[in-house]
Structure formats: C-alpha cells, structure tokens
Image 1 (cartoon, rainbow, N blue to C red):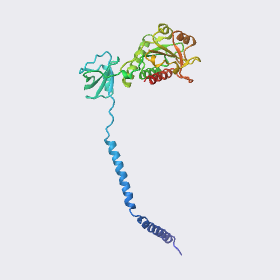
Image 2 (cartoon, rainbow, N blue to C red; image 1 turned 90 degrees about the vertical axis):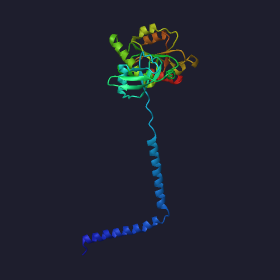
Image 3 (cartoon, helix red, strand yellow; image 1 turned 120 degrees about the vertical axis):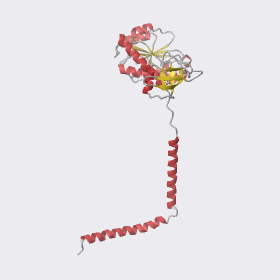
Image 4 (tube, rainbow, N blue to C red; image 1 turned 120 degrees about the horizontal axis):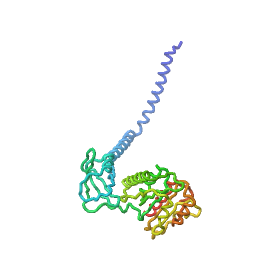
Length: 316
C-alpha cells in the first residue's frame, strides 16, 4: 500500500530533484560566458553614474528668477533714489503678493514711464520703497502698438465685459469705448454706469501690470451708440466696423498698406446678434468701413479680440 503522504513527499522530492538537476545543468552554461557578469555590472554602473550626473545637474541648476512685480502708481512723479510709501491700494497688492525687503519692483505711471524700485521695509499697513535708477526710466515703447487703436464695443453681458477689457488691454488697445445699442444686453446709466466704468478701468490697470505695458488704456464713460456716432467725425482715423454683411470686405484686404500704418484706428464691434440695420447704416454714414473676419459667426466678445490679435501680430 502506498501512503498518500509519503507518495506526495516523494513526488515533491522528485520534482525538486528534477528542478535541481535542471538548475545545475543550466547554471554552468551561464557561467561559461566570459566576462558576462562584469559586463552587466559595468553597464549598470555606467547607467547609475549617468543618472547620478543628471540628477546632480538638475539639482544644481538655479531656478529661473521670478519677474519683478509691476505696480501702477497714478500721478506719481518718479525721482531717482526717492523713498516713499506705496499708496494704499498698491501696498495691499504688494502684501497679497508677499513681497519681502530687498525684492525688486517696477513702478509705472500709466503714461509710458516705468522705473525700477526696491522694497525697503514692510509693516502691517505700509510698504516703503526706493526708486533705484539714477539716470533714465526703463524703455516701454516697444511693448506698445505703433498706432493708437480705440475699441468701441456694444456691451455684452457684464462678466464678458471684464474679460474683453482685460484681453484688449493685453493686446495693446489705447482706449475703450463701451456703447449701448438696440440689441445690447447690458444697460447702464447714471451712478451705476460710472461705477462699472471705474471697475473696468481697474481691470485695465491689472492687465497692464501683468502684461508689461506702461501706457494705461482709457476706459471712456458708457454712451448710446447713436449720439456717439454723431459726435465721431470720420476725418483723421481709419474706421472699421466688424460686420457679417454680404458686402463686408475681408479683414486682410481692408487693412491699409504699411505706409498708412501710423494712422489711428477706431474699431467698432456690435452686440450679440449684431447691429440693427439702421444702426449699421448710421455707422457706414459716419465713415466706418464694414469688414468681415471670416465665415464663422463670432460672439460679441470674441470678434474684437480676433481683430486686435491680427493687428498686433501684423504690426509687430
């Protein structure tokens, strides 16, 4: 009689023996390759050395310095080596950005002048700085378009105006004219209109601080389209109306030759749904040339930005 336990043990032992024999037969074959172990070890050492060198190079590379914080100080006459406390709004902005003593700043007045400065001291309510440059302010004209572009836009929904003002400022617009037309969604008047205008001016300030411009675009008071067209004379500026009309000239063809690139431009953009027929006719009578941005229908806050981007790139 064969005991199951013994048979199992013998079977397991037999399998182990077979595996042992196979292992013993294969192991010497691997060892017969001369230098195989050394080659593998050498390759591993080389890889480890390369990885270590790359890690050391990465660790030793200094981080790129953060750009200097830019602050708009309206009505400030910068004097070399002058020391003063930042106005309350600029000081709050600097504190939110966690500036530290010794940190560089760039201060600009919104009229094209920009000076480097340095944080001297901080308190809970004040930031004291020193203007560092002793000779000339920083050049800022290179960040501006070579012509003055006024964007007159029929206001879309309120939050879209914020984004439109911000992006138009980044793209180099010189002035913004919010308008109300027959199909405008947003209607403003009186004190409410002035509060929104001041808010949009602050949006433009923040955009200038971010994008490097030293010329602050002016946000004009909100107006109705019809009287604005009446007061806007066609002489002295190129006038372009973004239009979906069949007779609108494609934008690249409508743009003047480079010789006329210094002529100021007024760009008029309608609301969602476009200008009413009578409003577009009045704009044409005021000297605005209808231009098309292509076959797609763009939103009221997209179309003027597409035109401004084309201008900025073509004039760069």
